[in-house]
Image: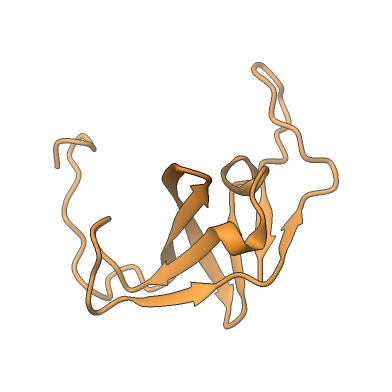
Length: 102
């Protein structure tokens, strides 16, 4: 694709563990990625969800494009757990940029 060098378009079901996170904060909208841990937990980067409430995040499963996908399933988040040592500063050797969504 144009966005990723040597990238290829994923086929439906190829990356079953991958999810799309739709994020909102006031008038701002964004997206991040995440991975399915089990039926109720998603792992993502804390910088994606740090300033958001759980009601500002939607988990989209089964989408292969950013646009609305009729085959995708949408889930609400009920809690956000950030790593207790969360930090991610430029030049830092250890970066705890991780969050778990339920």
